[in-house]
Length: 386
Image (cartoon, rainbow, N blue to C red; front, side, top):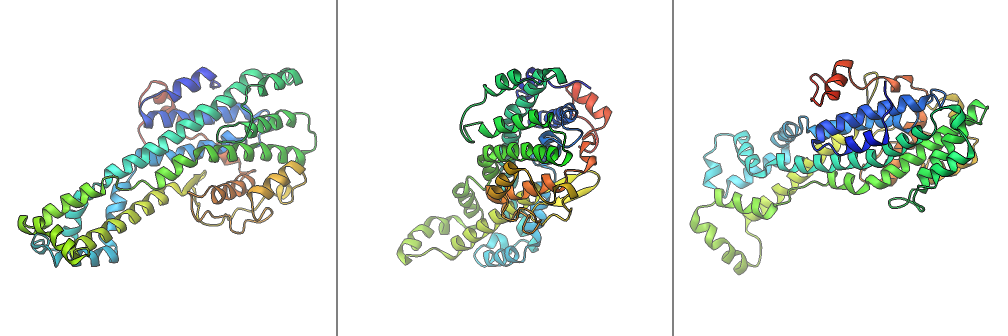
């Protein structure tokens, strides 16, 4: 298995097809993770977790079943069903439709959820690329400098760290500098517990940097809404109202100094549709598959216990970091992220995830089959489950 180079990272980040790019990013994280593992005594490094986070992002990027899930939510929502019945009071067009499902299908045509999910997928793809180009590039650079044990010199780590930008994220890279310095110093540590704590410290620093950098893309993906609501509403009104009523409704509204009932119902419908869109996107983004066959709901507290050596932390730097990012640093209580768009909620979950699954050896499983990897190498989209 080859180790991705800095040039490989640049090449992959420049792939224009977001689906193919994501698949290559996921595979590259696996290869970087495997290469780094010899320097972390087979303990997981940040790339080990990034494999599965990137694989999960791929589902959002490919928009797998998002529109179908939204339509099921829309058709089966009691609140929306009630609103559709309200709409039928004001429109002969809807009165002539035979059933509520036909009405909701009629409305969905104008909502065009595919466009919204495309916007969300683009935000996820941009975040996936952004993190890989920066952090994947730094892992590739680290591995190009430290090719063997003989390369672990103070001169090399000093030179390596000199290229990081000073300051905190999103613009600075101090956390990355501290993380890779800790990876370097792990080689000198003989105490197994302290070694694992130093690796966890490195992983969490990179995770904190990553999530801070990703904040705009995550919020954009979660808040992907109907960007053309006025146009959508006008199109709906043209379909629902005869020409005469469509022309005078603005004058009536102005005269009565209030919204017309149909406008009120459509506004409520659009607000509910936006809520359902967010629920679908959140549901997709707030799950994480951990091999083998374990699907984590990111809004729920983790059930995997901390490994014995990491149940209590000794390393001063790690304790200080956990105190900053984990309100319950020695417990899984409240580890579930209630709002994935909230950075503090997200990093709390990640801190407990990295710690609880530190000894989960299945994290080193391949994300794709050998045949799928060969297809990727040939520039093709692989068949089968991705």
